[in-house]
Length: 244
Image (cartoon, rainbow, N blue to C red; front, side, top):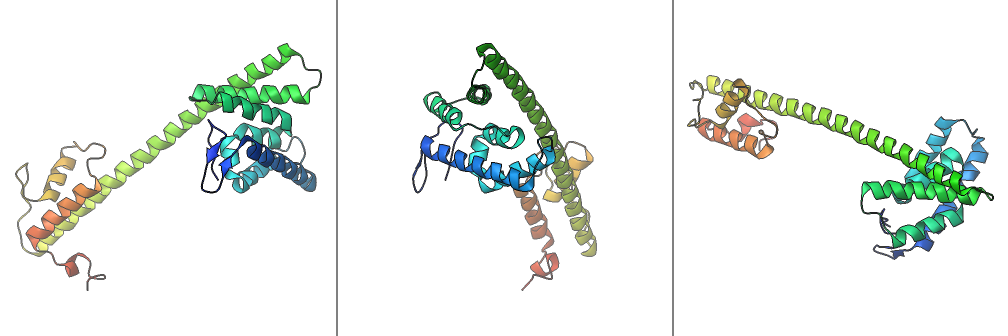
């Protein structure tokens, strides 16, 4: 099964995912959500319990919840859902699928407005429009915060990966230096004309000119192969435990 955020009629291996199919799943999810709330006696102000339930539904109905997060959020946190409102939402995005982040957030706000109208029999148009406006602003703030936090996390990951690359290179350099010493060979030559790939890495590190992605896997492997050939290192010397 597969959904998308921009088209509710999606082809997969077995069948087309139609608006009717998605609507039926939403109705089943709502029934399951209400039953669980009653069974566990979850109080309206118990956000932790609501989030736990939402996590469970995201596991059991992963694709639906990824495609329509606002729907599952209002089911669990606000205890609000209306089949007719969701059906209109599906028909709307079927005719006008979102093609950007901004249009996606607009559509989420549209759903909340439809939900408000269908759960308030005597709704006021001005009030409904205010609901949409407030929800849209809130979603934008949440979206911006998520992107900011995601960037910070990725920056930290990249920084740690860079440290690991430099550490791995330093360990390789020390390994080949020791092998040279054990074999009674002079230190590896330096400079651009050096025959030792590892020596070049050493110079790079010493000159503090190492940049991101310089020590890619294939470069390191080439350097190892270069030193291994020059030193005539056997497989047993490199990895005695796994040598045949």
